[in-house]
Each structure stands twice: as C-alpha cells, then as structure tokens.
Amino acid sequence: MPIESMNLSRLNLNLLPGLKALLDTQSVSRAAQVMHVTQSAMSRTLGQLREALNDPILIRKGNHIYLSEKAVSLHEEVNRVVHAASSIFENQQFDPATTERHFRIATGHMVLEDVMPGIIHSVWKQAPHFTFELVALHPGLTVSNGKIDIMVGYVGDPEEGLSGHQLIKERVCLVVCEDHPLAREPLSQERLLQFPFIMQKNDQNTHQLMNDYIRSLSDKVKVRAFAPSIMACMNLVKGTDSVFLATGSVQTFARNLEGVVVRDVPMDVPEVYYSMVWPEYWALNRAHRWLREFIRDELTAFIEGRQIARFPL
Image (tube, rainbow, N blue to C red; front, side, top):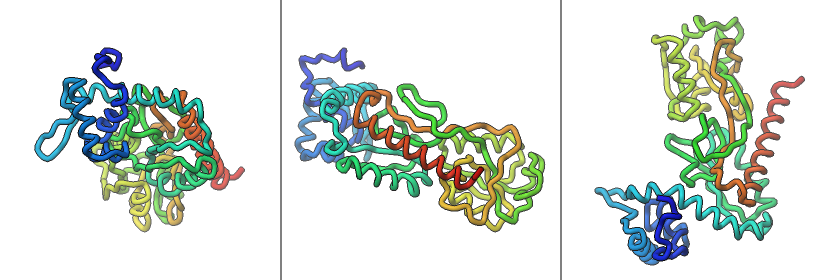
C-alpha cells in the first residue's frame, strides 16, 4: 500500500520512524533500542500504529515474530519516505565534522577484515561522529529493504531500486599450490578436470555463478571440499593437487598469496563485476553521498595500488 493512500488524518506522522524501526527489526525490544526509548514506549507506539493502520504489523507464530502481509508490503515505501524526510533536514546542515549518522556496510570477508577497517579509520578523521556496523555478505542479504546502506562485492544483477558504481570487471582465475603441475604447464579444460576441486559454498551470487560454471564443464567434476570463504579455499589448496577457481580479486584483496599460484584461465569463463551498490532513495542525501564517494575513492586507490604492486610495468 503506498503511503499516499493511507488515511493521513488518522496517522500521526511522528510514528513513521517507529514504524520503520519495527519493520526493520521485527522486534519491539530491538526497535526500542534503535529509537533509544523504553520498551513500554515502543509498545505504545506499536499500539498506535496498529490502530492507525488497522493491522497487527507484528504477528507471533510459535516462538517467532513475523511481519504481517501489510507490513511487508509497506516496508520499502516506509524506508523511502523516512529517508526522504530525513534528507530534507540533514541536507540543510550537513557537515562531516559535526554530523552524526549510523551506516551499515556489507562486504565480503577479505575486504571486511583487511581493507574496510582502514577506510573507516580514514573516514573518522573527517567525520568523527559517523558510526558503523560492518556486515559479512551472506545469503538473503539485500540492500533494497533498507537494512543495508552500502554493499560492496559481487552483487550479480542489481535489484530494482538500487544505484551502483562498478569498481572492477574481472574474469575467473585458477588458484593452485605453487608446486602443482598446473602452476606452470599449459592449461586446458581436459587437464583441469583431471584434478579434484575445492569449491566455495555460501550461495552468494558470484560463487554460485562460478560453481555452476564448474558443474557445466563436466558431470563428473570431483569435489574434494567445500568452504565458506576464499581464504579457506586457498588454504585447502596449499600442499595438495586440488584446484580452486576464484575471481581475479584474490590478487587484489587477499592478505597474501604465499604458497599458491594464481593463473588466468584461457577458456570461455564468465566475467564478474565487483561493484558498490546502495538504495537509490539515498541518491540526494548529502551524508550518504559523501560516504559512498569516500569509500569509492579509497577502494579505487587501494585496487590500483595493489595492481601496480603485483603487476608492475
């Protein structure tokens, strides 16, 4: 239901931030924490919202709380309206040195652990009152519902309602132990399939794309192990005859490549896109724009620096 179609004479617009918190958290207690109010105050807000919307909003099923069907349909629109309203006032007085904002940023393990902390340190030098929650990419994580402000990684086809910036376009590469036969000899599909595979398994877009590609090579692919992260897969390769297909970003973001060789795959392999995406309703918000441009510039400089260091002219 669009916000515009609600009976606004019955809806106290001051309740919208509380409604957003309840929709985001699906919990009265967690919504109270987000809004910095007592749980009883948030319960009263929920009661007012239920009366205004003629809907329970939160429904208990067994030991779990779920959003009602109407609440689910309202979630994205409520996010848009609340963010648009906050931007009106925030944009009039935005100053990174004084503005207080909280951001949730999602990215893959390598960037999350080794790159993003340094970027956040640099942000704090100019925007000391920004606070952050860093989130590891995982299945089902979406940006469009407003729970994530910026996502960095292999996001696949962008969801509707998202804006983005492409950071790298890459092909799949082969990772093997440094004394593996394929570390130096000519590479072919037939030769590759003679060795057991290590495969990443966490159902993220690109990992699923690559795993589908591996399965398409043959219905007799030998899989020796699955692991949830690139670094775990690379460590499983070391000292074995196993092979691992990864995105080329391992050469950019991996902590170190000691003990392994990374090779281009001279076959028809899919290209993958490493991007930064965010909800399009943040497009004109000055604080969000300042942060995403800062992160974009820092990541671009990091990527270019690593590529120069590892592939000097």
